[in-house]
Length: 101
Image 1 (cartoon, rainbow, N blue to C red):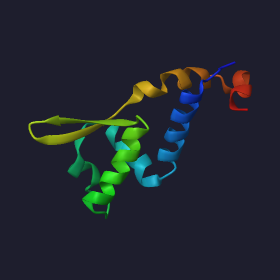
Image 2: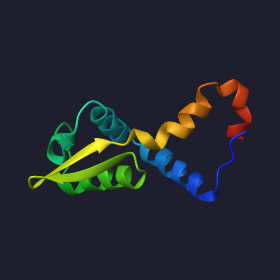
Image 3: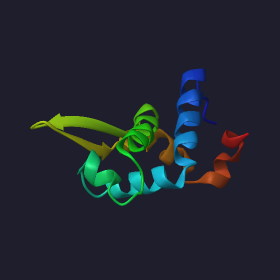
Image 4: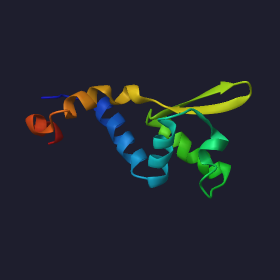
């Protein structure tokens, strides 16, 4: 059985809240294959940079992406490391079904 402390539960809640939005899910998918500038990341969506910034902040707070500044450009990339403990547990979900309760 997987026991999680309150901080881990809250972190997982933040992840689920962040991924509840289809735009943010698509942003994470796009960042899995390449680093993008913030402008490149939000270019396909019809939203202001302020609106895009809010989406990016939610993803960053959930530790799904992080931003770096290189040569005066802000880049975003995905952060897969957060998922490692959960993916190991979910490899055999039927044997660990009580983890979800």
